[in-house]
Amino acid sequence: MNLFFKTLLLTSSLLFVIAPAQADEITPKTPTNTQVNIKLKGYIFGLRVMRAEYQTQFSNTEYNAQAELKTSGLGAFLKKFKIWSATEGHFDGTELLPSLHVQQNMDKKNRRVHMRYNNGVVETHIVPRLGSQGKPPASPQQRFESDDTLSALLNLMMRGTKTSSEVCTGKIPVFDSKQHYNLRLQKAGTRRIKQKGFKGETIRCHVFYEPVSGFDPEDLPSTEEKSAPIIMYLAYFKQADIYIPVRMTYKISGLKAVIKAREITITHNIPTPIHTIKELSNVKNPLRNSISSTPDLAVE
Image 1 (cartoon, rainbow, N blue to C red):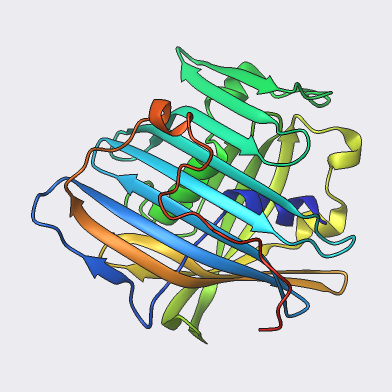
Image 2: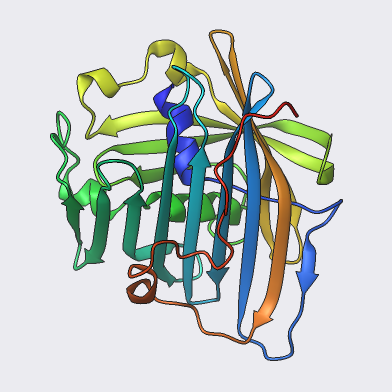
């Protein structure tokens, strides 16, 4: 399947969930951090082929994020796979500064990726090793000044309230342990969304995928793929003061993929500290509520 869509699936793990009209809200007594837990489902040709869960926890000074993604496969369009990832970092009030990132592929190769950000360098450890770092490979500066995939998603959600003054504007540089690319955001009006799990006003956001370095020639998107944006519909959630994509669509050459938010839980002032990646990297799945079954093909 198209590289852009696969990348957004993995990142973005991309995304999210919603309960009727608003997210479920839990407010414990002891004040500390905000936690957002999101679940989503993805469809191709009306068939459900993906389930994902994304959880992030953030305060005024730090954050973490975890995600798990499973696909059932759909012939040549999408391979069956399972992957989880986790990230932690600091927040300086305007920028997310990742410090550690772990990714685990649960396929035959069982590839594991560790990225540590330190003193202007990203130390990358990949087992088994990749056959190539692209032509040309991403430079040390490009790697360090980019977000990992999970931080990029949180960055996008925080735009308009925390990481920028306006929602869906600017570029988000990303480094995924090999490829360096930009997600260019462009507002395209508003739309009222009505679907299972969410009903309300959204901002239509076009997300363009711009490869920069770390790509092998066969991995570069075509002209058509680069010009076709992922269309995200962002809804503002006052409970967490962020914008959450409640729906994403991508259409190219007769193929249409849709990712829908199905459930979101926002927990204010959780009485537990933000977990560190040292804890997360030692478990098979960092999410407390994992996806228990492999997604099956189902007509919505």
